[in-house]
Length: 200
Ligand SMILES: Cc1cc2nc3c(=O)[nH]c(=O)nc-3n(C[C@H](O)[C@H](O)[C@H](O)COP(=O)(O)O)c2cc1C
Image 1 (cartoon, rainbow, N blue to C red):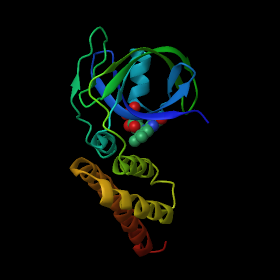
Image 2 (cartoon, rainbow, N blue to C red; image 1 turned 45 degrees about the vertical axis):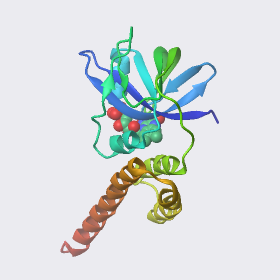
Image 3 (cartoon, protein in one colour; image 1 turned 120 degrees about the vertical axis):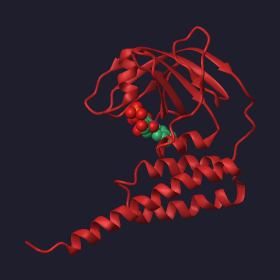
Image 4 (cartoon, rainbow, N blue to C red; image 1 turned 60 degrees about the vertical axis):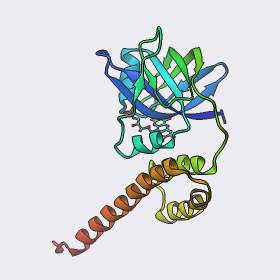
């Protein structure tokens, strides 16, 4: 299996409108692959403007926020590059699309790294940040993972939150847990409504 780095990708459309989305970038030798599932604004943008910024950030609120409708994260311009970076980036990489491997469900944009720039120091690993990332992945799979598995994994991840989270990680965790709660409440409501509807 290739190495995958979880980061935040910014792209622009033909009018310069900025789009932010978390992606798992797939390592392929010296290149990095962005693989968006269709439909995707990132995909459309990369076809229009084949450049992307990958922001490496440890602010887990950006990942959790993008999954919970909070997409307005500040960006700043990058010198000599058309796409801005995340203001919260510890470092960023400037990517140019070399080629597109087309696919009905998940095309792959194979990108070369033109430049990497550092903005702030990396201050070490933190279990709560990793736990928030794992909860992001679970939340993105609520539709098809069994509820028991989701709840079991949340119980385990919460140990790291309780022991090691700062205020930002607690906030990110709270947004994601609200989404889990809302998802199962809506599912129960649908099941109850179905059970109560008169048989035809
Ligand atoms: C850590 C993380 C990694 C993700 N990796 C991918 C990915 O590789 N491909 C993808 O299509 N979506 C991925 N997603 C989900 C996208 O961020 C989300 O679906 C996003 O809205 C992409 O669609 P968009 O380009 O229309 O914004 C990931 C989400 C998270 C939190």
